[in-house]
Image (tube, one colour):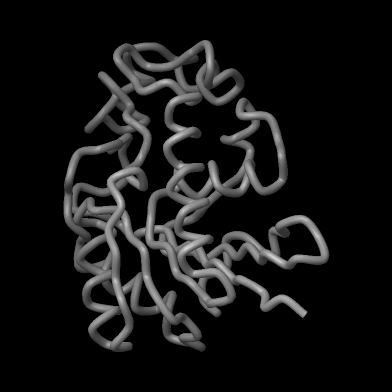
Length: 199
């Protein structure tokens, strides 16, 4: 029987500056963010390797955890958050102050109501898919941890579920939460859980 590949997806904790549409702005974790991340991995630590976004809010914790567990760590540029264009650095409150319904339009139709200069969801989904597939192949039969962003995790989950891309923002991914996908030769890849605070 083929070994099962288990892929855990860990979203970063709170960055310096709090909640905002950060995209690819490279803010580090806040003190609270570090606490959230260590809490998220305070239970079982079954991982045999880590793959991480290179942005600091993911990479610095991934480095600390890989050192703590003495397991391999790789960085993949394709795991960066989706680019939010002119929204980057702005909070929801700031955007609503400019246009009360701007976020409602975006969340209900994220393909046609993207911020100016934002990365297209199709291009974003494609790069995440390639990163995910290659990581799954390289670590086949192992228990892998991917440290990434809410958008990246949503992308991996909708691809696993074969859901339409416009449904991406119907999945809530809390800060420092874990989601799990299992790949088994007998059945299609399966979402086991999403959004757990710790294992």
